[in-house]
Length: 286
Image 1 (cartoon, rainbow, N blue to C red):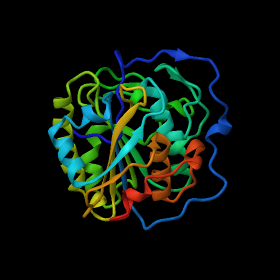
Image 2: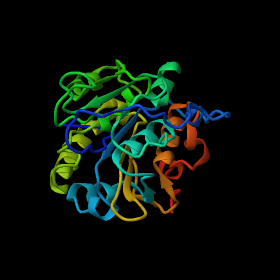
Image 3: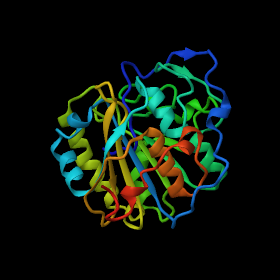
Image 4: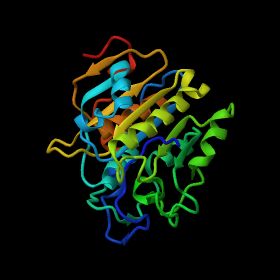
């Protein structure tokens, strides 16, 4: 099976409703100045679970990708546990959340931003057999940030079983997010299992016209284990070469890069950080 952007969730897929007010909506409003508009591109994101930088590279296939493509060597999660990292990647804010419970946030975030801009997107969830809120294991709501914005499940959030057919369509979504289930993302299973999953997922993404025609695939891990929250992030492009960037980056940098690539304003903290731009230009990283 395959997945794009995935972060692990602990325990059951059902979520605890939390009614306390999060960080104000202003924290995730678009930046005042627009981002540069690049050539049309499809963006894929895969988020894996709970490995430090070194632990992720213990996977043989993952190490091969790192040796062949671009690597952000100084990339970090922004919080613990999973959920605030997912929210950071999709809104530019953790909203002050420090748990994995369900929080109905104001209608906002990357999905709504893309919809309003007329940019097609879909989030593919492995194991989502019913709805965003009621699907059983291995699906995890806390690894699906989109229902948190506005308190409902967007039509663009679908089971992963729709992925192959959508990618075969000439009108494949411009932005693709895939969350693996709790075993394949490495949360409940070994690094070896997660690595084998990537060895099936990544070639399937690379086989799509959407990736082959100026597309880009980002693979990151939601959180690490050391005090610096140091995690691996890969940038995989057609014809890409091995590069490394030692510049400081985090999940806000990833959001900034996605938004720049799709030509929309940066949200929240993404407007205040550097993107992964140096890994998208051949020979420019150091």
